[in-house]
Amino acid sequence: MALWVFGYGSLLWNPGFRPAESAKARLEGYHRSFCMLSIHHRGTEADPGLVLALDRMQGATCTGLALRVETAEEADVLAELRERELISSAYYEDHVPLALDDGRQIDALTYIIDPDHRQYCRFDLERQAQMIARAVGGRGPNFEYLNNTAAHLGEMGIDDDEMRWLVARVAEIRGENG
Image (tube, rainbow, N blue to C red):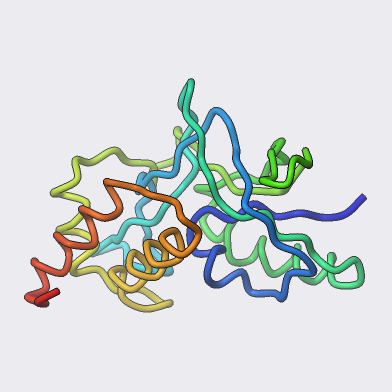
């Protein structure tokens, strides 16, 4: 059975591997949300950023990208993903059913926020924008993560009003004229 990975945030634009195949995919029962404090990659313990996570929500749908891993690379890709995504145990790894745009139904590996973890958070959009505008972590500024993710969602034809508002507000906070 092929290893598929579901990307909904940075895996859209930086999966860390060359997919053998990719397809637009939908996951039912979850939504993409800036509900995880980033204390390693896009912020620090002292000044956390925010990253996207899958947050369970009845009736929600998250559209992202299903990425098929080359069979010969599965062990390496899985090890690299676990090192990257499970750095603080805020995410847990699970296999979820996805509906691909071409009609196929597959199971894919993905990373879901643990709502009981200390990095789980729920902030209003203004507080999210303030945090994203200033935080910087080991993988760079938090606003770059936001902008890259929003750009790739746009390229995929995925409209996200909150993401669009955050991009504009973060640019305003940073004094960037868009």
